[in-house]
Length: 170
Picture (cartoon, rainbow, N blue to C red):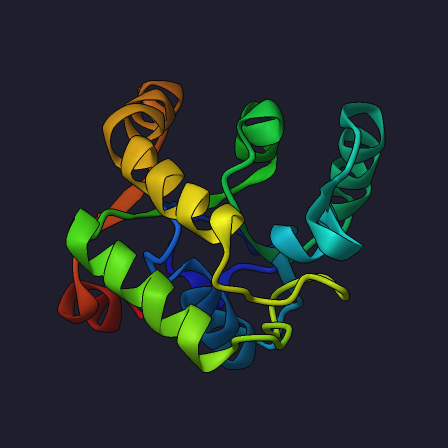
């Protein structure tokens, strides 16, 4: 069944940092006229403070209630539950160099500003925390990606590897 013929559309967009999750989610939101949920915007508190696990689980339950949504973000602790509610799962599997390049460009573009898909008070900064995030992105490609693929095993999901495959899927 195609997405446009469904009444309840619940799309989950996954992938490494810098893979294009936010961009794809925003595109789909505009095309389908469905709310885009950027999980980073709700997970992070000002000055990059993490939300506690109990509060995060409660928020996720609320996000899953509507009949239709497009949600992006990995957050492993709630991934299995979000997968249960999704009827379309997209995994953006772009090369590590491209992820890192996009993250650096994003930091330059929004330096000392807040990205549209980010929480208030979480400015992009070139600092130690940013460098740690780049290292975490490398770790994601080698560890977390495998974990997500294991969680998705046996589920129906689509892997998109480049801009052409993303455009063709849209």
